[in-house]
Amino acid sequence: MEKRTKIILALVIVVLVIVSFLAYQQKFFIKMAMVPLRAYVPTEIPKDTTDVFVTKGNMDNNEVFIYVQGGPNYVLFTDSFNPLLKIDNSESLLKVFPQQSQIINTSAFAAKPTLNREQAIYELNQSVEFLSRTIAYFKNRGKRVFVICHSYGTEIGLEYLLNQENRADRLVLWV
Image (cartoon, rainbow, N blue to C red; front, side, top):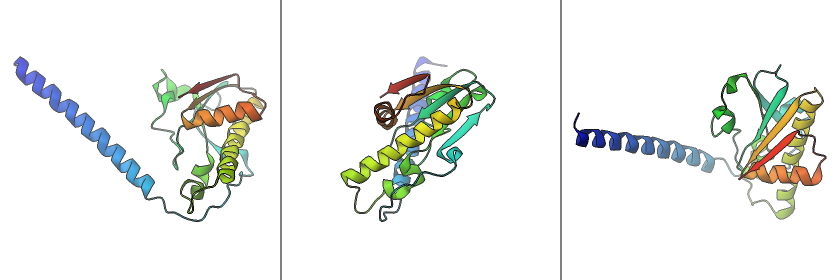
């Protein structure tokens, strides 16, 4: 193949990848904009602790990797936007994804009128409680707990450190 043909082919592939990515992003943001506006209702903590997180992988693993995603968002990312998937043999790990208040309660995400300061602090504290209960659940089962917080999840992690007893073995705050 000629050098020029190879360059053109490479450019076409790059453009296709970029266009595919942008189309996915556009679809995602359009979905976010479509969340119906409604009156705010405070988020309640589920009675069953296992309702505040989602697990993927090997439950028998003695090490737990908890990923607190960025956002705020109305979707819990367990299969995309997830750095735990980049770890070698990640399918054998126990990966845990704590809920956030606006995921369980979309009225906190798309409130009309928008949340006031006190409501926003309340919702953040609910997300911190979800993280705290998730960590405690696995620590009470004798597991080593590694927490990775990203973007908005870092705010939740910081609030956790400020207002809760840290029971995690390691906590990474990643912006």
